[in-house]
Length: 173
Image (tube, rainbow, N blue to C red; front, side, top):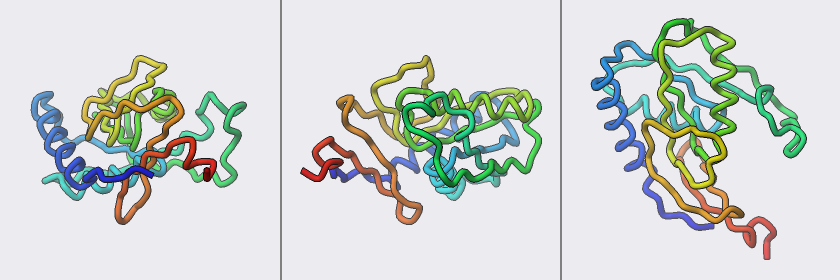
């Protein structure tokens, strides 16, 4: 597995960019929602680097996915935990990797089931090539151009580590 990305530096850069985004857009008192599990890990690490306390909720989008026929249901689905009202609030949605955009689409569908936020800004650790939907992060740690058969995976939560997996590594050859 290919490694070597300084996740701490990426997270600090994201935190700095997020502070700037909130200031530029005059957003005060936002809420943060991390997508289970990697997005929650990234959100928790970002909150440690932000100067003010922001409430954190977690979202499990398993029931909102559109690819059950290809990947199946995860056997241990944990519920989402949004202990706040999202109606007319500014949301920072956090995920580890933005690839096709389908996870973010599912997350937005679930958030809107809880209410209609004033805005949603997307923060991701990695935005990689291969978007299928017109979704782009407002804040990103890095962009990766990978082959269609390569995957980037975040392991954690302590420490957080990025790994790029090639097809050979997946099959053990």
